[in-house]
View (cartoon, rainbow, N blue to C red):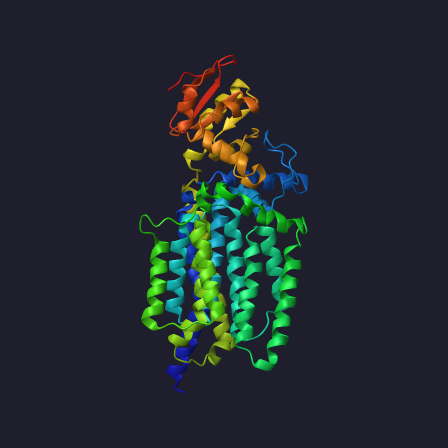
Length: 495
């Protein structure tokens, strides 16, 4: 081997070693610079509030204490660890904290994703897949717990697929990943569900005499993963809490992230599906039955609920990595020179420089930019007026619940739909969206409402304008307030 060729191999190996970190750093800086777009969901308010409560009390919630419609109702937080992390970051840096934490979550996801793909396919294709996955997921990148669980999901599924590709069982050392996932977010049930089909991929390609033994090892690993998922302060109740959201039936079709995919206009997800079909036809991609099932399951999940598009975006390439690697083989390279001490030293130094540059960029950007939450979710002036009036029971819009909780105002409803149940929230939407306006006065009387705080451009305020016994006392571009006519309504004039 010539000296120049050996040096070229060493350089390529070092570049490959730094590639995931470079992609992660680029992803981090991108989401940092668009950080205000991460602060658009009022659920972030109550997530942080619960995290603060956990830190203040040194305990976890088992009942609801934020609403006046479900006080004392059984409720657990399946994202308690993420909520604590968000609360700590918010206490330290204000809204910049959750933005930085979210950007780090996306950076880790991209880095782990490229690292896992790079073992099977060429680096440029791995980076391209990462860019496409980030593009498909960007609609759901918010300062919320699911982002902190995203890198764990990618690592978990990637490691399981790697074991299946080797026709072996997963290592028991990976089980802490499931425990971490279960404490970060309720989406860990997906990781449990995927163990079965991935195990079939390993068993199908194993030698006939070793299939039963290998299958039993996967079964034992699945049992271990189930036990690891219960390694939370809530124990086995974590499993029940994580699946409660799926029992909301018709309500899921009204909450944006749980809506089915809509192909009325062309979307990136639609393009990805068409591209996947085209790849299969053009290249004659042949997959095993378990891999086909995995792709169909992930596609069905994304079609059913748009929030699952990110799982489709990051996990389908991991399922396809080995077949694509066989279809587009890369030239072999002897990376022995990269294992020598100077090469490792240069790689470590490069990694430190990338991390230092990212943190320096963060400090400089935070020095002149103040992150703020979207105004459409924060009816500040309206809530100030309600506090001045001293009203006790506020019939609030669904998207205002998180902000009210952050202001220590008891809510009628908020983003914890699994707490309130399908009928309760459906009645609320039907009453305020004009589908069943006759429900509105009944709900106002049933829960002894003193004032309403509804979205300005929704039908609810117009219904209340015509409702006897209620009077509009305040309106702006965000919210409208109505109070009972016999209430103390000394307030600012309408505008």
